[in-house]
Length: 375
Image 1: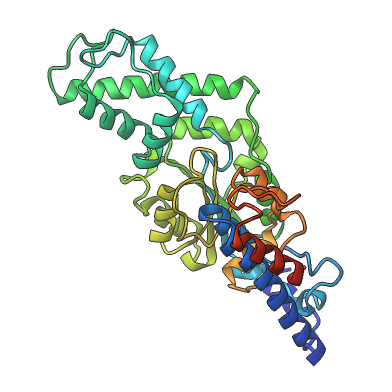
Image 2 (image 1 turned 45 degrees about the horizontal axis):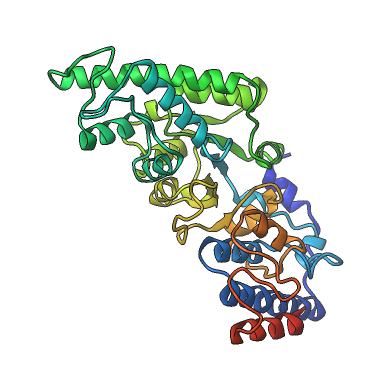
């Protein structure tokens, strides 16, 4: 049965006055409650994550009773054409794995920049900045060598022209990719929580699923077959890697190509990204973007995102569809503060303690009063 037929078969139930008033009260109570918590207590991505949970309708106030249109069975999934995932940082938290592979590559080929006796080593902090600002692998190395001097190596004692620079970068990237595959194949890496479930939920509802990554195709294929399994990988409706497009993220080309291949409408697609580079690419393609940040990207500005989460573990397909439909249901899941605490952004208000405020602060007392009123 087609999706439209499924929807047309659902009962047509009109909301009563009581239903409408109840929904309004839930919005006011939940919205004011969590908005005050976000504004008075939290900042940056912690606030965005909290308000995202308000927006998608996590249900403290709804735990005992669903909204009238959900009770009536009115489906909303048909409004979503496709769910598109980035790979690195979204399907797996991979940045440190890539960093280790690059450092092993530099050591193997004795890559030394001018004035340095030791091979190049990228620290965690530096790699995070490099990844967030530059993106793809080859551009990262080229950017680094342009600023620190082109290196000597076991491949070239010195580089004579641009052709040799290109050959050096290509060789290093190929070796690094194989090293990265070895790390993935070790079996020590698992998908981030919630990713496989969301893919399966989307596929079960007839929603197309795609993966768009800026990494090299061989690397992404290897990662996806190991982490998703061959069956899930083969069922993808679209798969694009950095090799498939001329411009890398934040250029929106990869997502524009994906929309065309999927036969989808941009504003009926949701992209899941982990960084501001991917966010800009998705928004530039006219698509809504949900961010699930990592420790490497948690300090970036995600104000353009439709929603921000530290994890997809408790995010359902229904939640994402509500974002697409801009259905603001302002209630928050009971354990949302535990989720935020897990992202190391904030702490619960317990025993008069808070990460940003002291019990003697006026704003703290106001916040406690607001919490008491709305809870």
